[in-house]
Length: 584
Image 1: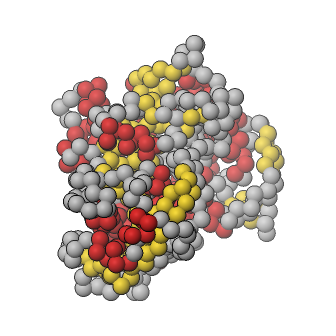
Image 2 (image 1 turned 45 degrees about the horizontal axis):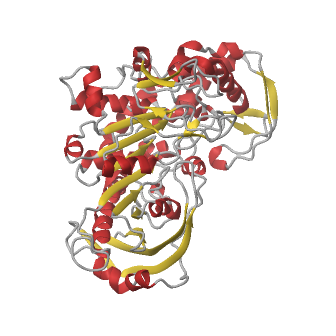
Image 3 (image 1 turned 135 degrees about the vertical axis):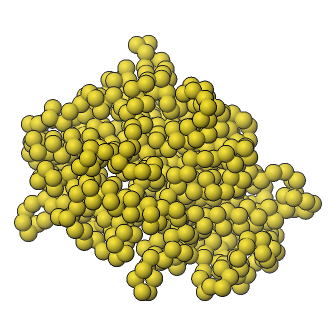
């Protein structure tokens, strides 16, 4: 639910159009990868209520010897072959059109799995990049454009009607409906394409395991499905879900306005680097990673950075990131320290009530980054409020009235947003009883140094699920029950859906979907999440990640222990008394 360029850049993503062209022949794939065969494999009329599939829109071509690039979270693969399929559908009584795109593996590579993929920012699709992940695991995979007008379109293209009012149909599609329809259609297409339910080509008469994979907006999409449709998926990999109200992105600019100082981004980066260095050893190990950000909250004060030097080269940022920055050097000022301390404290209204989650000293502060004005040779606030303007003010503009904005205004807008569009867009429902009772598994992960969506949003939600699902049990007993089917892992030093360039020596989970598949299909409950150190002296070493609420503690002998810390619970699950309903 955030500005498109910010998150897509985090994925290293270039949006792709559906693959075209035909390579060498493969008899079994070529036999079924035809328009006629796909037409016969589509769900029957009425299979999804109110959805009319357009058979004339079907586009099919076979792709051979395809290479899936490795990413931080998934291994690559070579020699993959698949049927590349696109088609569209409409809703009864409307003139709308939603596009679907599927990769259907060659029958000899199919492993009875279907994978729904999530999007990023305010786009519902990661295109070819997201779809290709399924090929690594022998899964048919699907994505949707949400009905927004094509693979290069996002919510902004459809959310305002011609008369300027909010399009709630588009918001419902974005919030939960489009992913649901794509998943139901995709799994049925997979079943019929491979004829898994009866005799015929590649018949197995076995279950097709249905998975979801997504991070950020994709993580929110995954939660929207398991909260609303408990029997739709067997398991879901949920990364850093974007559950927060977009109002919170304005905390940095409002704090800077309150302090009356707009620091160059480099100055705040130096403060964060100082905090990481000071807090590095709090987990018992010095490795360049502040793995105990909860302890860092009590340990480090930004005033300790005052007078420290900073020096940054020029940065050619895009318009959507605030524009280019010149080379800059200087020393950390008391005003910059005050800005950092206020942001770390959290968001409170004028009555002292907490209204939002917050980050800790060892976490970057992208929401407080300023823009540079070359005319005045000064740094100016850069409120990232385009989506907020769209939803609350119902106008798509980057201009934002920061001069009239206070913490009380933020509280008012949070409440207004919840009342106005909370149901279609939020994914904060904590009762997952139907999903659990259907045997569902959740592997939820969040970078502990995520400067875009604070890890606290995930710990608060996870605790809400625990309290809702097991109200009669004590803390230890209820967490033990929850961990049988739902695990949360905070990745030390990691950023938003990716490793963190400011703490590059941390371990990162390299094959999240494998852990999920092993759990769903082999009942291998991941007590710790497998992770690998990506750089530094320990590069290549395996250092697994503790499941929340246990926290990492290294012994003097170099052994990782996962321990319970009551103070960490209080830090990561604070009382939210400023809003009458939960805020994540």
